[in-house]
Amino acid sequence: MPDEALQVSPHAALQLLRVAQEALTNVVKHAGASEVDVQLRRVDGELELEVRDNGIGAAGVGEDSSGRGLNNMRARANQLGGHLHVHGGSGGTRITVHVPLATVGA
Image (cartoon, rainbow, N blue to C red):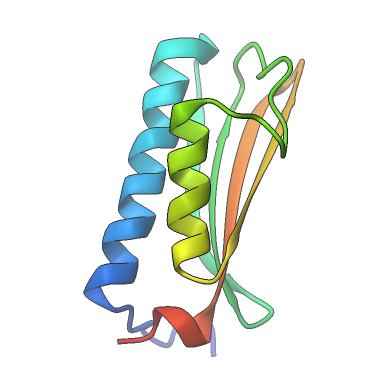
């Protein structure tokens, strides 16, 4: 049911907030973006957090990137039983976290 309230544990909420903060910090510091979009939604039994910008793109950034901020975001997603994806290109960067709903419930 799309309008049903989602109950998220305080721990999961904090981890997702920190991922979003780090992603937004990266946009401010590195992207040169004029727009950023943040979405949190349910998708196929998972909670999905997406941060997308229209900046210069994250050249050389991908699933195996070893930057401290990306490693922190990846660790937070893993802590919740989820995973982080980074897609960077000339049209901007998209950071997506997928976490099973079963692990984030209150």
